[in-house]
Length: 488
Image (cartoon, rainbow, N blue to C red; front, side, top):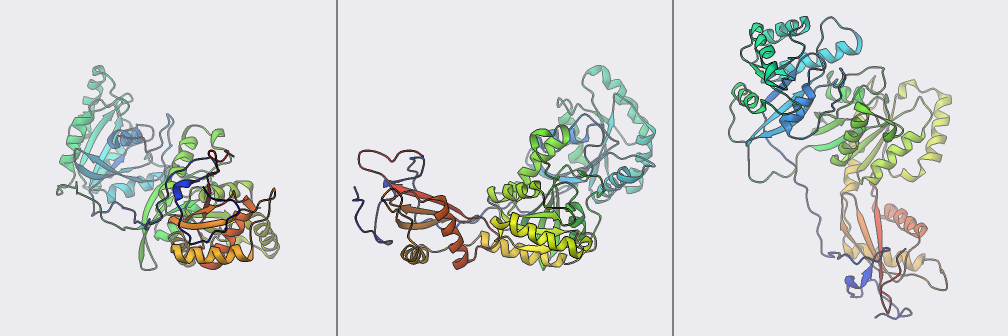
């Protein structure tokens, strides 16, 4: 084994398997690893099925049944879904888009009116419509009013009588023939009863398409951007501003958005996939029902994104909640942009205190690009794309092994690790096995203190940039004589 007092060169050959991490593990590191791309599903225009109906008839439960997984937020109260949310479905080799909508009601105002408008837009955009009626309640005036909307659209309609959990309720479903929309299909979205016949009718209504199952997926595709932040910070307003249309329901009520809403947006000559998410509340375990599942889906949306834009309301004091959301994004390894929203409401006094708050509270993420915007007025929204591109460039940056070790050699010579317990750990070799986010592995003669690792990260940023991305640095220490190093 190695002599502790021996001199090591950064480029000296050694066996990485003789090194362990701080937990005593010796997982192999591929020193020749090259940066790989990520397969992104692509693909043409899929037929769209809009699922509509009045509140609490089981539309979102039916969406989950068609998808075969729990995607849409479901709770046994009306009004859980508010936006039109699209999901890709695959049934027996046929791919199509399912568009979940909020409950449609007649002669409503405020938030309910905005939800109903989104349902009507979904009907106009769809290739076919799945109209859901609650068989246990029977026909209502709202159902009959919505039938008039469907007839005006002239779209193919599949009529579904939901909550038919037993044969006795099939007679109630048969009464829906009176709507004049054709055969009503009795279904239990909860238990799956009648789902097969319903899907056969759906495929008859949807436009025919060539077999959508393809071998392999094309590389590339729109970059995925998640809009995150605490409730009522302006995420939905920003998405509507970027999309140039009223895409997401916006209301002064905090927590309006519950399902993540995807939207393809053309900005800066490129197509981006922006995802509006539910506001992250103070403690997920303190939430319940729809808000709880919305929080889980927001966390999943961050994981699926490449870059997260964290919105902060500058009209309010920077809160612990804002800091925790930023930490969540950094810990997930996503690129990060901080957008200070509602800048039009900022006066000189608040601006002064805001700058002090940023200096004190956000010192750990000084590497994140900052954009001052107003989603409501559109102020400086065009600066968002350059900031996102900068963050993604840093997120994907890879340093060659030779350049990294030359940098480490200079760093160690100028600023060696402090002596601890009569010994001075030395960095022997470094490599970057992966990007997205950049991850570095340092092979050393002893454990490196957390403060020294932060110093290395700071110098890496000064030398190579890495704007907008967290950096992961792990240390491997060579095994000691007589066994492995003790676990810490």
